[in-house]
Image 1 (cartoon, rainbow, N blue to C red):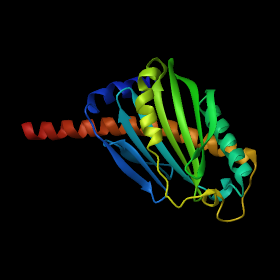
Image 2: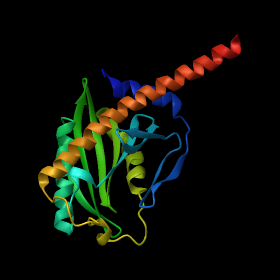
Image 3: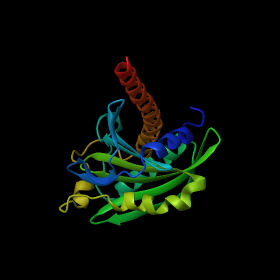
Length: 227
């Protein structure tokens, strides 16, 4: 794990030069624009997307609202309470410090954006998050960057976050739980935030492993062709 983000970013700089951004439909509820070199992941049953850019990482996780951590959201206050709990759970799970938090209107929906400062093996990073609860799914879009590159990354970061699209018919009604059961407890949303936060770290490890597996495969192919 030592200097893992810096190592990944160094590898990314070589592999992401000149890549195009494309529109990617996560599912019928969410579309984003991301670099074409994205990878689909499955971390402990949670679907996700990882994309690489020069000096930064993009991660998306999707968590279904079900099971023992199911949230019962029936109004705007429930939604905002859930968002705040998730934010604090994510921040705590990554040993971060909150820099900024705001509830925003995106079309007819309420979303949460926040940023934290965190250190991973002596690397100070800024991690930016966008969370939306929609159609009984929790979507978390992340942009990770080295703190020293934060100003330079602002344009591409906003390009990512502003690209997010929802169905034109989506309303606040779609941000309510479809089944009136579960908990509106702050503790549950905090736990969800912790789970997602840990999944993000696992996602980084998966990316690291995937890169080296691909490199080994390419080397094996080259060696085979030379013999």
